[in-house]
Image (cartoon, rainbow, N blue to C red):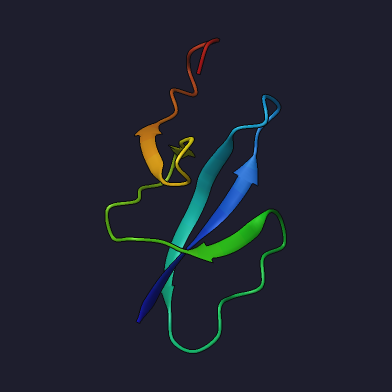
Length: 65
């Protein structure tokens, strides 16, 4: 099965992984954000880095993210 993540953009313009699921066949259709295939190491809450990958978990409890 293929692993997909829903990617949303926060108020600061950062792209964050909102949800992850494994699906057979075509990619699911998102209601919010967009869906893309991701590696097994990607976790919910990770932020996209400058290289296009996901490098850290966003701290939702900090003003500075």
